[in-house]
Amino acid sequence: MRYLRYAMLVIASCVMTPAVSAAPDKDTRAEYIRSHYAKYEYNIPMRDGTKLFTSVYIPYDQSKSWPMLMQRTPYRVAPYGSSDFKTRLGPSEKFEQEGYIFVFQDVRGKQMSEGEFVNMRPQDAYKRGKDAVDDATDAYDTIEWLVKNVPNNNGRVGQWGISYPGYYTSVSGINSHKALKAISPQAPIADWFFDDFHRNGAFSTPMAFLFFDTFDAPRTEPYPYRLEGRKATTPDGYEFFRDLGPLANVNKNYFHGERPFWNELTEHPNYDDYWQARNVLQHLDKVKPAVLVVGGWYDTEDLYGPLATYQTMSHENKRDNVQIVMGPWYHGQWIGDKGSNMGEAQFGFETSVWFRDNVLLPFFNQHLKEESEDKYEQTATMFETGANRWRFFGQWPPADTSEKTLYLTNDDSLSENKPDKDGGASDYVSDPRNPVPHSAAISRGWDRPYMAEDQRFTARRPDVLKFETEPMTSDMTVAGEVNVNLWVSTDKTAADFVVKIIDVFPGVDENTNEVDKETGDRHELVRWGIIRGRFRDSFSEPKPFEPGKPTQVSFELYDLLHDFKRGHRLQIQIQSSIFPFLDMNPQTYVDNIFHATEEDFVRAQHTIYHDAAHPSSVTFNVLPSQ
Image (cartoon, rainbow, N blue to C red; front, side):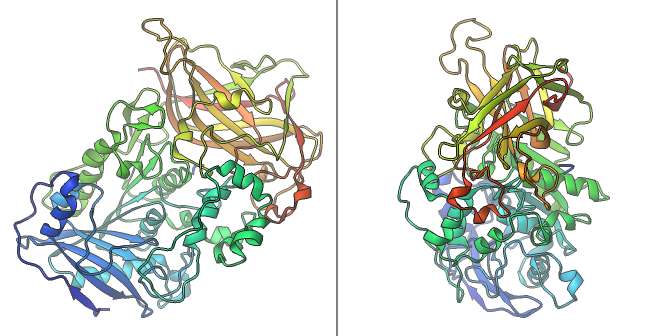
């Protein structure tokens, strides 16, 4: 993957209170905010006259000027009303203790802001002329108004946000306002064909179905309330989405054509001009603010976004102003909780608290507060799973690695030696009516813990192949992307291939040699990835498989930093479904899978070759032993 001056103003009634001081515990955080901040609400005009609703919280302490920390969101800046306060303003209580002016804005066309909302709006205003608007110009115009109109600001602005607000943070760096000094895009959407709703062309039905049910509902005028999604008919997402059948049934039975973006994405199954125009990465080559990209190794919703955003910014920008943090987190966990574990994976300490206190706060203080002595200068701050420690690198991926290739063998093992005989192959039957579940848990269709789940529940299925190394004689730390190179065939015309990297724990404690009841023989998922076979050569020009013909299929798994400890094994699992998190391939080639019918879904036999003529393998980089 290398990879405007006037507005309606409502002022909260207030009395003077003491200057910002030590933040209280979380139980009294809301009271603390009320007693230390005044809330204002503005309708800020953009260059085309559209007004965007903005809430601003200003410290009562007027003895000094304060920097502004902004979020722009398509969700809600609630609560609305000058007398109703948020219960948290910053990423942590310490931001409120430090004293910032906190700014929250409903983006164009959402909630209380005027205008038309466009999902992942193409960022092309600079091509269309000075009166044209996009998300980047809206950020610029907002900052221009804020620095001129908000009292006691020091002329410095920072912006942050997670997921969609992370995307709005990224685009604020495009032709950015000179007052925007620091941005932190966190799990940012970068290119929706590859993150969130697609994975190398495979479609995340439950994420898109549940999200767009409410988010994509049309509106006729601004509103302050939250839309409610449809009620679940079963807690079993596997059952629900299997019974749903072809994706065409979503509109037929549920949306009835009333979700505009759903309609658009189903008409663009390939990486065509529609998606390419919505790829924000192409605009991130001249970002002037300091950047701290944040993501989570276990973020099933968007792992692509932060990695691709960092790679693009760090390679394309001339100044050394881009940093990255990747922690052992699910989507937004670095802000949402203490980060001590992710499902069954335990980390030994509060990784999220460490990040907020030691990285995020110093980063913003450094760039937004002239008097601050805080600095955060590490380029890449990466959590090493398996070893449960932070590692610091001058670049990511690290420079000082060696390449290692493991080949699939006839005896279901992984070897550093390339096969020297012909005829080796393994096959399995993939059945659309009995797809491989993405998790052993009963859930809505995806859940957070599965990203580190014990994989023995799939290893014992006949439609899952597994290949495994001997126990490690010393620790092996894998850093960066994993390149998968498979030789495959199918007796039909379409197929997906899922590859999982798994850390197999020893059955006994390595120190006592006694049975480890907690983790004995645990098969912990480290990373997985998929390729929709039609896109094996091009995401823009798909093509079918020729039945029975050995075909090379190569793709990348997202980056990782994982230590396979002495005594552990590295296992590869290969399958053709990971359901219902990703939709089931019908296994009959159709031009548009969103238009597939029941008859297109057929059982298929897939073959993975591992011989001299067709050597299937995985390749990754290994750090030197410490």
